[in-house]
Image (cartoon, rainbow, N blue to C red; front, side):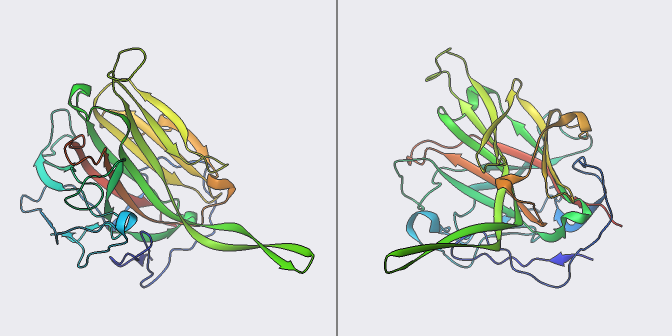
Length: 320
């Protein structure tokens, strides 16, 4: 059984609101599960092969993270799998395009994402911002070893936005118990107490570009920056030494860990493609909810983001 999650997002965050039923199990699994293992989650995958695919915008898009404005109704894809973020809005261009060379065998369509105004619609700002495209989610207990996988096309470095900074993100929303500290004052005394509550954590992989314009070695380069390690800090992942198609994935296991995978090409991931595993923020993940993509740029009103193309994103679980 799956817990269907509605396309509803709060004013304060990428919210996840429960629907019908829940996946629970007690079976043990291996310490890691390769993303893409098991059964696809119904309604939580897209191959962009439908030639009539389109994203219906309801402009202006939301920009709550900048100006506290959520602008309903939210944009949505024609197949109801993708939704605009109520916090940041969707990328300015979402278009089905022919699959670039070297893609999955038989694939004829993929999704292009690109943005100019990643902050307030029609305005520039003084810093980097991002847009979010959110996938229809299903709540899956980590006892079912959920995972998510995508292919992403990296254009030649000379076609990237000329900057040093984050350009793209492949992210997930999970639930985990988090401790918080509160302090009370009573006259001359101070007492502290701790409480634990379930919170949503946004984990995943970013791609950071280091333009040769500002690089000390005079060469373009890129690297994965990953969220998050046991202390809750972002950490540096694999260096990107070739452009073109990559396969990225994340899996979640009953021990509460997240496992990160990346491999050049479009072949299925293997255990050798895992580059990190963590108890993020020092806690144990309880459930996986959805995946989403970030498109980032300088948000100066003049410079477009890098063109990002994705194909065949899908969520999986292992039935028991």
